[in-house]
Image 1 (tube, rainbow, N blue to C red):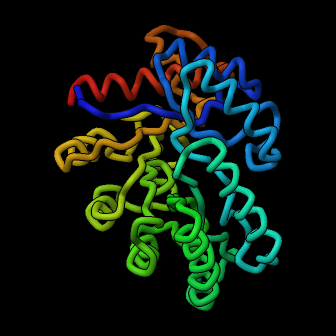
Image 2: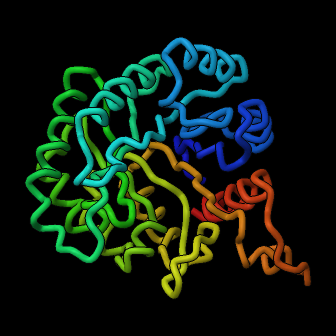
Length: 282
């Protein structure tokens, strides 16, 4: 087993209701949550006072936030940045209220079928504003390699890291997102390993990009987790199942069960069990 490793996850994939999220997290012996959506809307859409009530419910249940799963940077690079910067400042207030230093964020959606190069300057300027504010606010931004944003491929993630990496800007490594971009995950890991501070656990198939449980796809999840363990990584492994329509459900059950739509609890549990099987081998 991997001493010191901490499991978390996007519990809004279990259910929209916070009480149900907590119930399943406790059942699975997970004591952290990467909070994105709660009680039907995004965490960052709540007031600080409302977030305080959410925090109390979590604390009373023995659950802490590993990160705010924010939508910051998940707008088009051509969109108006000013209102988004205000949302970011509010997100920082939410993170402080929730007592987590981490905010998951992105580097802007690029126009379809265009070169990313003409937008590099604007991306760096706007990301720089985020990072400067993080420095003055004691916040750590975690950049996720999301499909179709500027930092989707490993080389552009590396550009961002070389520009901004430090105490307040680090990398999330997401296996499935790289696979969906046709980015070899081993090469991506080797390129980004000095900058990685947080891991999203989901896997995907190279053939069609469909998301599968950890170890069932082409993300080299086990190989990279071994390398992370050997490097001394002791941060979060955050489950992001995306398995509601997982076609391999019948194979997992080792029976002739027809494909069915999984409940949130079922998909989250399958994702958790797949990860734990890998961790048992490490």
